[in-house]
Image (tube, one colour):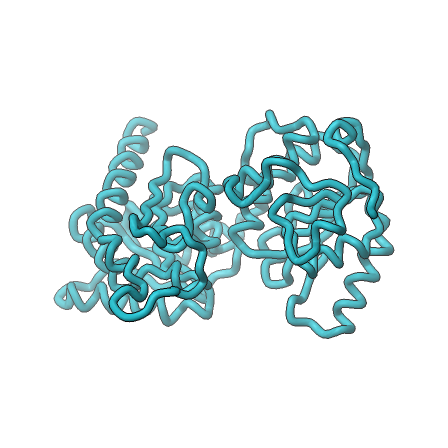
Length: 365
């Protein structure tokens, strides 16, 4: 049995070598990032390392509070695993935060042999047994952003401003700006992709909302996503052009054409982001861009970004928020949430946020 540690003990600990184990996914990583500044405040002399999926490492490179990135290859072989575990053991961490809570991260945590390993109540697959303490009020009903921030609270620095910091060099911002040249303002960024089929509100519905905003408010539209989502983004563009065949639409498909930091820069420069529950949605929200989020199989309270500046639109069907990766229904009920959640609701929310954004811009000017 591992030595158990009380929350009272945590308020008095010191640490010189800290490791965050949070390899994925993009949205979860983004919601964890605001924790770094409080950790640096609590342990100003500590070295801070982060175990991160190699594909996401680019977003964290150059972060002012991260001293070392430890890449993790999820599909790597035994040699890669052995190399990673050896590095974790040799690093001699004195505080480890397993914020993923899966079997593989539990193994990573154990490999560190750290005298203090902290996890969350959402830990599963046995990973909780690798922790000396699991933080209370971090269960599945607690919003994800609040679960991660609970670490700051138990360490006595939860009163700090919760804010995302990213290193976006000028050349990254310039590259992102160049990708947007010629598109009118206001600028609406659309991300229609998601890993789960039950999250992917149909491309034609995104197209209908974007086309209406373009026609009624004169917005420019940019489609975003990974290389794997480029075809889906193209479907949105094609659907928009099909309804406005007589016009050269101010729309651009950048899916698969940006690095993660360029993606962040584009999202930061947009006036509004329209998205499913996805990593880019969370990245935009944490960067301060207003978001209209479409929620079908996930719950906006548990999985949505914090902040009154966003509009999170959810299906009202009983199976909404069930967190099923594939639809459990067949026949006419298969993915019925997509049809039940109309474009009119999403369009109304987008128009409201755009009007507010324009008003704020006029007031500031």
